[in-house]
Length: 357
Image 1 (cartoon, helix red, strand yellow):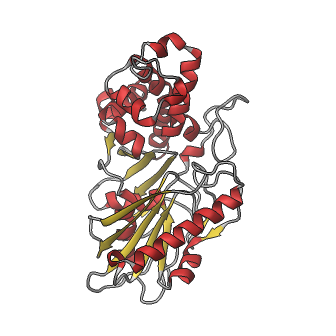
Image 2 (cartoon, helix red, strand yellow):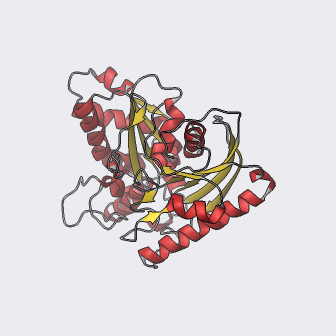
Image 3 (cartoon, helix red, strand yellow):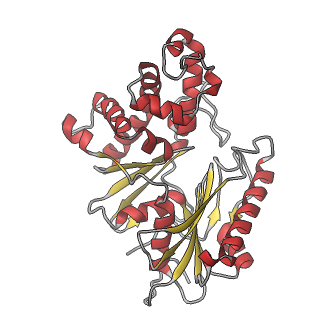
């Protein structure tokens, strides 16, 4: 049975998981609720922790962790009575639940991963698998009246456009991977975790901005020394964290602000291109780094976007297109739960990228 199917019945308990490049989150939702309960957070055993391993070894490690943690959750009181499992995955995915790549999870080339089928076999329950931003878009589809583009700025960058009751993606999983749009064609461009260079995610993601701050500190030691990032003890650039960087930007620190402004130039170009190409006028930003910087993120991005100009829009109309999502990290958990509630089959759930109301 496909993910387009709809079943009608009473509320059911679903175990939901969000596998990101930094953190694996597992929780429970009931009947498509907008609230997730009993969330467990575990550091993902992928590229961020074991970067010296091969891509295939990392994929195997991540998949083993995901299966083991889901099985343990299902056996705990939190997962008791669950009728299905939903998993959002940080990487492009085909409609039938095959993960095609995991840039922030295992980096380079590895075998396509039929995550929905493998987890169904291991857990003995129907499993729905979806790209993480596809899942997150369904959280906001319930409250956004107009078409919108959801963009996450965290360990990587991803996006999805939701329009007329569906996420715009093709059967093979193409679409919404603006984090891998090459914005710097130079040979010295920052490397992306996928193996390419100069991709948007390598520059404007949380990890990209952090690396940019460290490079800027090496190039302008005086500016860094005057920044709150250096602190009274004269901290070294390699000791800067995303949390400290976000706090410095919120405080208006000139050095940290200049770093983010530089990183936001290609992100503003991406928003401009999406608007110009298909007319989307609502952009929601989620992800740990964007949410941590907060309203300042939108202000600085709006500065770059108005500098570029959005054809046919005034500066105020351009800024009004930008908004932050909810200040939590439950977007994918809630979204995959809502997808499950809409697509529950009687015997089998397959992978999904789009879903029609």
